[in-house]
Image 1 (tube, rainbow, N blue to C red):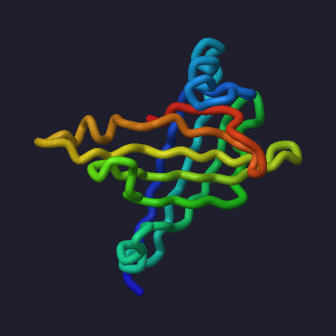
Image 2: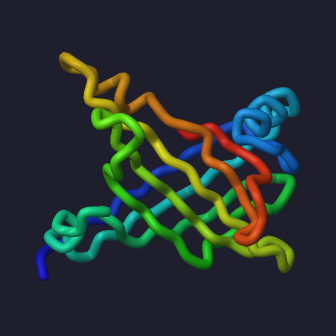
Image 3: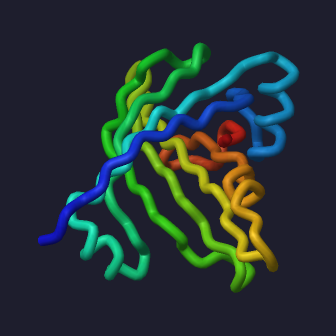
Length: 149
């Protein structure tokens, strides 16, 4: 077993309950000044195993802050994937997924950041790109969204 790695990250942005698509949730949340924040901690206790796994999957834990559903809601489980293949061969995804319980409702926050291999040095633009994660009931369709930064 090799050394591991742990890092923390916070993603925050506009959010709206009841949205049918991530873009709709972003627009409605922006208009209402309603945000969701995911405070995530990624843990890969065995770095060699993490690198050797083609999905680069390991644990994710954290909390969710969102006034409409609750503040400091702890996750009940989570998954992180690093550099999953995207639709384009030059696209890789950093995937963040957290399960949580809010007032007896099981919810799931899922989202990803996009990393593109463009020509030239473009590290700043790579770090700025992201998509709108969504919140779902584990057995239902997309309900809401948040822009990740």
